[in-house]
Structure formats: C-alpha cells, structure tokens
Length: 225
Image (cartoon, rainbow, N blue to C red):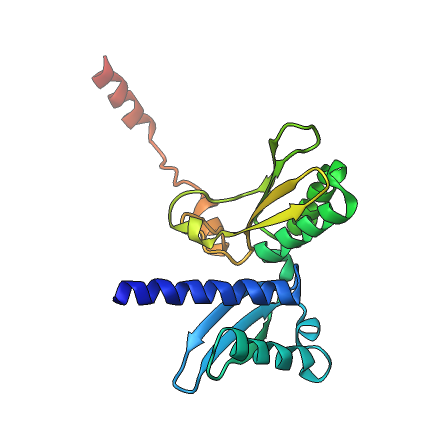
C-alpha cells in the first residue's frame, strides 16, 4: 500500500510540474521543486524571468494557485519564485532556447544556432559545454550531431558537477531532440591542481651544487678503474 501511495504521489507531482511548465511557457522555467509542509504545499519555481512568471500584480500566480486547488486538489498551495543568477550556465534554459530557435528559424540553420550558443557559453567563462541535436537534420534520415568545446567530466565524482538537461523542438520535418551539458566555472574538480605562489616557489627552487675538490676526483677515478 505504501508503494502505491508513493507512486501515486510521484505521478501527481509530475502532472503538476508539466502543467506549470506548459502554462507559463517554454524557456521561462529551469526547475520545479515541491515541498510538503504542515501549512500546505510549497512549490518553488526557479526562473530567469520572474517578472513574466509573476505577471502584473501577481495575476498569473493567483490564477495558477486557483487552478492547482481546483484541478489537482491541493489544500493550500504556495508558489515561491527564485531567480537564477547566471541563466547562461543553466542547461535547461539553454536547451529550451535552442529548441525555440529551431522552431522559429527552421532546422536548416541548426549549425548556426548551436555554434552561436556554444561560443556564448564558453565566452561567459564555462569550463566546458556539449550540445547534441538528434533528428532529421538536414536530410530525411535522422542523424545525431554533436557540438562540444572545453573540459567536460564524464566519469568520477566530478561528473555530478555537470548540469544536464533535455528539450524537444517541434519543427515542420518532425521532432528534434536537444541535449545540453554545461560545466560551470565554479564546479568542483577533485583532480584539479591549482598552481599558486607556493607551488611556483617549489618549482623554481634552484638545485644545490656541491663543490668537489681535485683530490676527491682522482680518488674516484682510481676506484672506478
């Protein structure tokens, strides 16, 4: 019974998250968290555009709370907005932007869209970035294209520091899948070696040279013979 309740709870959470994403629009929301408190349900929305999510005088938030109570039968939902500081390092927002650009400009310009976004992320200071596009690009047969630059961990503990996300673009030729992986500049790399002043002093230490007297040299030559 507990397993069924847990599965039902996760289904309801997935439905709530999908509805909020569709209602607020693609490219505005990065992540949604739902917390259950004694007062009611707390829904945390991570976004880079809080003004568009809230609306004028909080109209969108009020409408969303009414729908959540009526449709999903939540007792007392409370929506909290958290602004993202660096949206260029958020993989979900980047994937949504690429998907919207493909829908707007068409799939023939997928290389321009991918390279432009990749250069923008690397110039902002990211350690590495990888963009994967899969679908009918540009031929009638589905293919996978990969655009990558910089340093990106794919194994070990540092792999958890890579921000990954997926999105889909609905174009005239069909659905195109977008996968983005970004390693932010503040990511923890456990095998990184930082060369600071102490390290440079150790490297630049001059070796000690011992003076050998001529008598000692002759004695050493005799021993060698």
